[in-house]
Length: 219
Ligand code: 5RP
Image 1: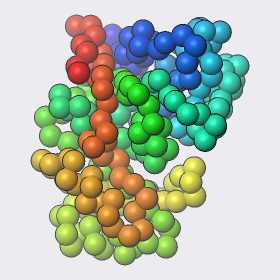
Image 2 (image 1 turned 30 degrees about the horizontal axis):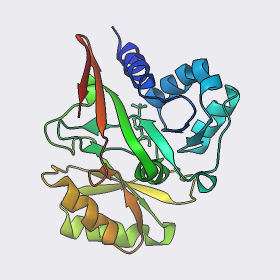
Image 3 (image 1 turned 180 degrees about the vertical axis):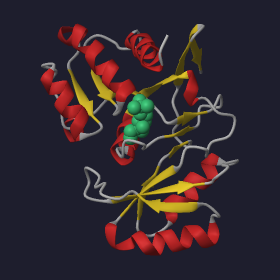
Image 4 (image 1 turned 45 degrees about the vertical axis):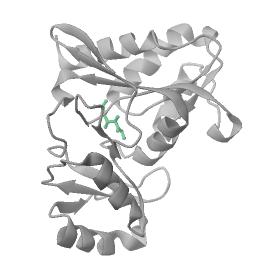
C-alpha cells in the first residue's frame, strides 16, 4: 500500500461523515483532492461546497460541484482537510500547500472538522515539519527577525509563493512545539502575521489516520 493509497483510504473514511442536504467545507492538498474526487460521486446529495483555496475551488467546479462563497453560508456541517503533521492530542501543523489562512477560517466555521492523514504524518511533538506563517509582505523581514530572536527557530522565506490572499509565507524550521495552543496564540499576536499553521486552538474533532493496518479514528 503506497502513501497515496493511504491518503485515498482516509478520504473515503471521511466521506462517511458527510450528511446529505448540507454544505461541505473542503480543504487543500493531495489528500483533500482524493476527498474531492470521492465527493463527486455523491454530489447530487449535498447542497454544495465551500473551498479553502482557489485550487480546491477549481477542482470542485471541474467535478460539477457547486462552490459557494463562505459569506453566503450561515452554517457549515463539516470541514474535511489533510495536515502536514498531527498528534494524538488532535493538534496539527498545516499550510504546506500555503492555504492555511482560508483553511483556518473554514475550520473555525464548521460544526465538525474531520482531518484525514496517512500514518506518516503522525508525530509525538509538532515541529519537524517547518511551521508555515502567512505574513503581510511588507512585514516579512520584521517578523523573521523577531522569530529568530524570540522563538529560536529558523524562518525561511518561501520564495515565489504568493498566497490566495496576496501574502507571503515564512516556514520556520527547527521547532519542537511543546505547547501548541500557546505558540499559536502568541504568533497570531505579532503585527504583520495573518495566521500561522498551528491548528491547536481549533483542532479537528475527528482525526482519521490511514495506515498499512487500516483506518484508525481518533477523537
Ligand atoms: C495545505 C495543507 C494541506 O492539508 C497539507 O499540506 C497536507 O497536504 P497533503 O494532503 O498534500 O499531504 O495544509 O495548506
